Structures are given as C-alpha cells and as structure tokens.
Length: 328
Ligand code: AVJ
Image 1 (cartoon, protein in one colour):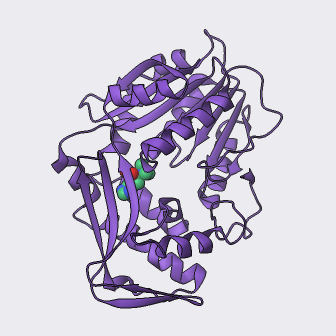
Image 2 (tube, rainbow, N blue to C red; image 1 turned 180 degrees about the horizontal axis):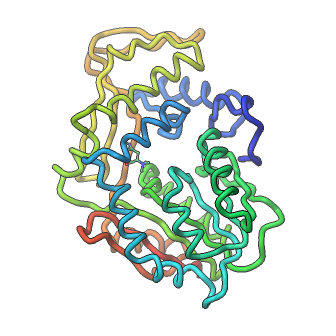
Image 3 (cartoon, rainbow, N blue to C red; image 1 turned 135 degrees about the vertical axis):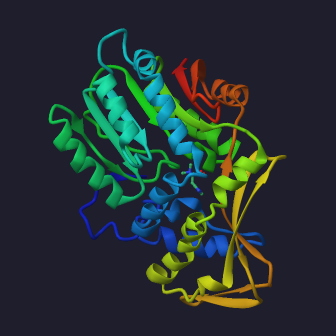
C-alpha cells in the first residue's frame, strides 16, 4: 500500500502507510490482546532510527559489523551473482535501506540503472537518497516511503534488465517464518523469473552471544525499546511513564528467536486517548521478535517460496549469512 515518497512534514507518523491512523489503530489493537504486543516497525521514528544506528555501533551488536565485513570480503562474487553475466543489473530494490554503507558497496559493484530504496522512516530515506544522488549522478534513484511488510507499488517506469532485491540486516528476522515465507513469495513476484535476491540473515548461535547483543551494557537497546512508549506519548497523546517499564530481551531456543518485551514494574493503568489499558506488575508488552536461521533452515524457507538457493556467504567468524537466491 506504500506510495511514492511524500513531502516532509506529512510523513510525521511514518506509520505503516495504511492511512494516517495506522499507528494509533495498531497500538490500540496490540495493547488490547491478552499478550500485549506492538509491531516493531514503529521503533523507527527519528529518535528510534538514531538509537538503532547507535545499536549498530555497539561492540556487543555483531550483526551490522559482520554483514559489512562479509559484504566487503565477497563483494566481487556477490556482484557477479546478482549481475547479468558481466552486464549491469536493471534495478536494485532495497528494503529497509538503513545506514547506506552496504548499499553504496553494492551500487558501485553492480552499477544498476535504477536504485529503489524502500524504508518506513521518511527522514532516513530522504537523507540517504540525497546523499546518494550527490555521489552517483548517473543513477536513477526512486525512494519509496513505505512498509515492506505489505505489497508495494514500485515505480512504474522501472529500468529494463534484471531486478535484484537487496534485503540486508536480518530485518527478515522480525517476521515469523510464515510471514517471511509470504514476504519471499511477494518478492519473488516482484523480481520475476530469473530475478535475484540478496538477503542478510542472522545465524543461530551461542545463546550468551545473542543475549549480549540484545542486552548491551550501555543500555542503548533498552532505550530503543522504551522509545516506543515515548513515541506513543508524543504522537498519540498517551501517558506512559517509561520508567515504570523495563527492557527485557531473551533468546527462545525452541522458536529460534530473540524476544524483546517491555515489562511493567508495577500494577498500573495507561491512557491513550479514550482507551485505558491495565497492567499487572510483571505483565509484558511483546515488542519484537528477531528470528535466527541456520544456513539450511533459511535455504529451505527460500526454496519453499520459489527461489533456488544460489550461494551463501559468511563473515570470517561465521556469525552472519548473506544468501544469494534466484527466482525460479
Ligand atoms: C533491524 C530487526 C535486524 O533484530 O537485530 C536490534 C533490530 N532490535 N536490537 C534485530 C534490533 C534490538 C534488529 N533488526
């Protein structure tokens, strides 16, 4: 349901592009469930995006560094895989364009005719697009402000040639395996037969390492998680007292995922507009899942969604994977 980038200001909510009330409706619905939950896509307002960038620089948070290292180390091979036998790719579509360093590496190696960054954070998207336009005047850049968890309308006049979807950062880990399957199917339709996908996926690993990555010593991840409550206060007029909640993240080995929660420290009630939500002491709001996949596990998922596994690249420590897939 996303549309082309909207002018500044109008994008204030940055909500899931489901109309101006998407954020409010999702929050009310999420907090009305027996297990209260909020969609992680709402982490990324301006402050949340800055906090996420700070997370990416933490020594405990290995995914960003590992993915950048593996991309640098295997760039030539990655570009050969995603390109069209020596000639250029037509369009490079990137979901959740993030900090842009890896995007630049890929753009330079692939030299696509068009680059379509898709991001839920309007500010981050506009900033990144402006920078890339200065760096690559030859590149047709068409930002799409939107939520890639829904079918997207891509710019109509897309360049001819092979389509490549780049989905880095293990953002796919936010989706349940069922939703990831549906997402991969949708992407398969977007690139068409013979199109390619490069998807960064965090690997299953020692639980202590995972735990540290989501419970950093400086509390940046806690601030990122708690900012969701502050955002609800700012944008929806809620009266959350964030200090009455605690960041709680753990690895669930049975489901293969990190779960993030905000745990109420006391029995309390919170108002959002005309709605009132009660919390028991110890009751949680489930704010994020971050699924981890073995190499074989992810390949099987991609295969079931219409891709044949091409190649998998790893960083030298074997912490993170980049999967190259081809649509069949
Ligand atoms: C952006 C979804 C990949 O799951 O690791 C980082 C978000 N949450 N620390 C992740 C996140 C807490 C991140 N993703």
